[in-house]
Image (cartoon, rainbow, N blue to C red; front, side, top):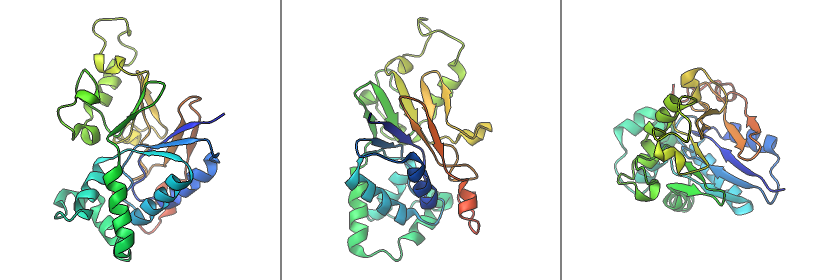
Length: 242
């Protein structure tokens, strides 16, 4: 049977991504859904994008845009690099592009320009980098930046988890819109958790690959989890986003 596999924030850790893909043992009819933040952190951001594009040619892949990807996209499109971006991993990304040809850089620019803000599959499961604030769903979101920046959805799920039943009028309407919601953006290591976390019907797949954590993937149907070696061990002479 085909699998739907969601993959968390990579942050330039190509070695971890390759290791993870090997562990998953991807089959031709599998579907891969990437939650964004492909760049900024470890030294292989540009090479990570090249690898992702190759995966997209050979397998069914959905690529969601993260906040770090939005920063990088702006820079690739000719805008002045955001100072906050440079302080939070952007410098390593800029450095990784120095040896890329203009033709290759253009293909990367096109990749970033094609990234989705969110994806809803045939089982009414939402995949989004961060969240949304509209009680009517991301389609009615007034602030597009929430797709890659919002943390209120996850924070609300954490607070509501196991406290109020779905049947209650107090249960958040945002969470009732979808059978499941998969996000990245907020490392589970912030809560001293090293694997994907669930709160209500929301799954956080970002397990801190940008820092001292691992890169994680999860089969959405079976909830089987795969993880890489902690990224800092794969890049012993680097600091990541620390």
